[in-house]
Structures are given as structure tokens and as C-alpha cells.
Image (cartoon, rainbow, N blue to C red; front, side, top):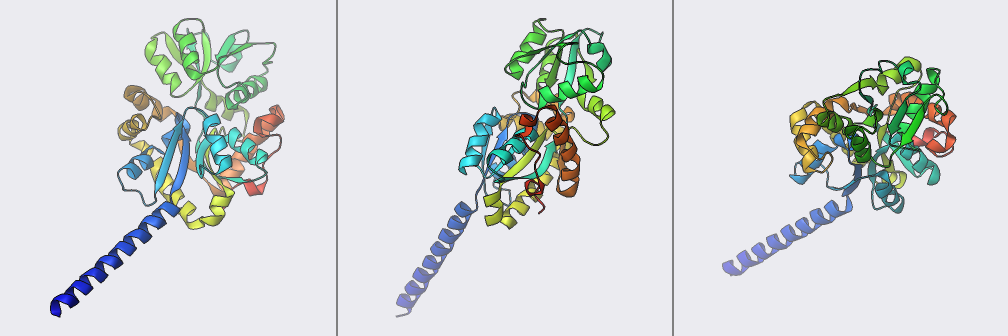
Length: 325
């Protein structure tokens, strides 16, 4: 009889434990956060969180998708396959417009990452760009509008006083510099560091963030952000807050350059450890949210809108775009 009671007790305990495990498993599946990031600076701030998640040390359950371009991420946000995404800010605004407000900006994660590189020493100010041929990527995206604005505000007509040659990818941009085809090019990190490592005669002639600040006291150059689907925010408000706490810690951890460089290479965000270590300090990784985010990026969107309304989706985002927490 005692043996029978023990067996019943043991069976009951096992059943309860199994049910508990099943419940935990179901909760984990139900609350998994699907995150999409882009290779390069926009994804760097996520690297430490990705490492914690991979090693079972994150507070939340995550599934990460690392893509080469926003075009691979945006459709998955629209279909609901991705809940949270790190994207260029103008892409985020365009996505908000096209989905009629179904995404919200959680935080800005990247300031300016553009540098004017020169094979020579003739460019020491924006004025020195007049008459030059400038190679760049990002036609119809943030880089083109930043370049046009900085040139225009310095009295240089982008269509007549310079020649802008667009290439399709940042790898092509590096190649035309290293081959000598381009003498001057506006290059984002980490491609700028990669190019500099391959040709000793190349130098950073201008930091486009500095040049932006010289001509605008109402906006900041804010090029990357994190957005979430509004439906996901409404359904999991506490989960979004928890994610932002973990993400902020991950961004702040970027001061540990060597470790974060390792994470970036392991996660496919930056291809080379040497490039990662040299580039991360120039990627301007930040965490800006709330009212500060809204105030600072509203001016930036205003500049892009004045340059070309289509660059941010045809309209300035209203208050519903900015996550208030």
C-alpha cells in the first residue's frame, strides 16, 4: 500500500512537472520576439543582445534575421514575420506611410556614418568639392539626400557644380576607390574603414555628421532606428518595454569594442574582425528614445521631406509614429 501511494505521488509529481514544462514551453513560443537587422552600423547595437540570446542569457526569447539590405526585412515586417526591425530612418518613415501607421519608431540607434574619402589632399572643406566627381551608394536613400543637402547649404548645386556617380553597393564603392577609378567618394562605415585599410593614400577628408551640424541647428543626422509593428506593441506592451531595456544595455555595451567586434563577426553584421574593431568607434551607435527622439529626428525628416517628399514616404510622420512607452 505504501509503495502504491509512493508510485501515485511520484506519477502525480511527474505529471505536474511535465505540465509546467509544457506551459513554460508554450509561453516561450508565444512570446518569442522575431527581430530583423541589417548588416552594418544599424545592426551593431544588437550584437551583444544577439550573443546573450544565443547563449541563453537574455531575459526574452528571440529569433534574429540578419539581412544585407532593408528590402529583405521590410516585407517580413508587413506580413508579421518580423516584430521588431532595425532599419534606416527614412525606410522606417516610408514603411509607416505605406502601412498607414502600422509601425512605430521605438528608438534611434545610429547617427551619421558617412565619410568623404579622398585619394589625395585637395578636399579639406565642402567648398573644395566644387567641380569634383563624387562617387557614392544609396541613390534614392539617406546618403543621396544627406549629400545633396550638405552641398546645397554650402552653396554648391548638386546637379551642376559637381558630378555625382552612383554605384549599386558599398562593395562596389570600395572597389572604385581602391582601383583608382574614384578620387573622391562618400562612403558609410564599415566600408570606409575597409577602403582605408586597402589603400594607404586614402584619407578621411570630411565627416558628414560634422558638416551637417555646421549647417543645421534644428536637426541631427539620425540614420538608423528600431521600429516595431503597432499590433505587436498593443498585444505585448510589457514585452516591448523589456526588449528596449535589453536593447539599451546592448547599445551601451558597444563601448567594449573588442568584444562587440567579435559578436559582430560571429553574427555576420561586419565581415572582418580587424574592420569591425576599427569601424565600430566611427559608427556613432546611440540609444535615443521618447520625446528627445521625436524632437531630434523630426527636424531631420523635415530636411529630407523638403529635398524630396518621396524620400520619407511622401508625408511627415505624425505623433502616432513615435513610440511613447
